[in-house]
Length: 103
Image (cartoon, rainbow, N blue to C red; front, side):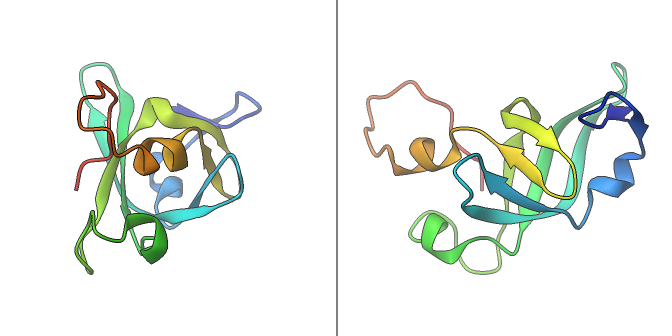
């Protein structure tokens, strides 16, 4: 079960449809589905659709989505805030050992 920012439990299905923004206020996408670890009973990823075209241009074809690791999530409320996605996506260094959103 997932918890809201105040620590209260919430239904996993309530994440679907929420907008996702970077901590800098940039719209990233909308939650279409969640990836779960059933053994640990935790959310491990967010499948996003309705992506920010400017942010994902050249990385994801139109109509495709991305899967973000749930550990990038910093706050869940009316919207979901994530850290570092803008910097991670703009970092085009191929020798970098960073993680990247998966198309």
